[in-house]
Length: 151
Image (tube, rainbow, N blue to C red; front, top):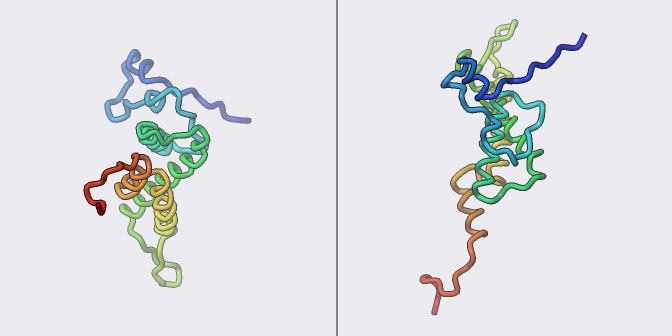
């Protein structure tokens, strides 16, 4: 028997019912209606990250409709990294095997792999200061008279 997926209540419905919570008040659908929906495999945190990245790109005129595939991937990487980091924070980075050896936990390996993915996509989508400056440098028209140019 297949489980029936319950539709999530909107922020307006929760407010009307009196079940809204201040720490969860931001409904992902409130971001922007013309942003492509995220991939179905994203967790709730991943969906929030997805819409945040889309909003960032849209504000900087760098969002194309085809980008939603890659943005879902990077949002998933951020979500997996955060989940693994929380597990390591609470339980440490190493574990002891049955034979007594100490080894790195799987969560640490996930963090390491996802941080590589995040850094790769950060450059592409301007998710850090250096990448934003590089992207903006190419989008600005060159001035004919630059104060540092040789006369």
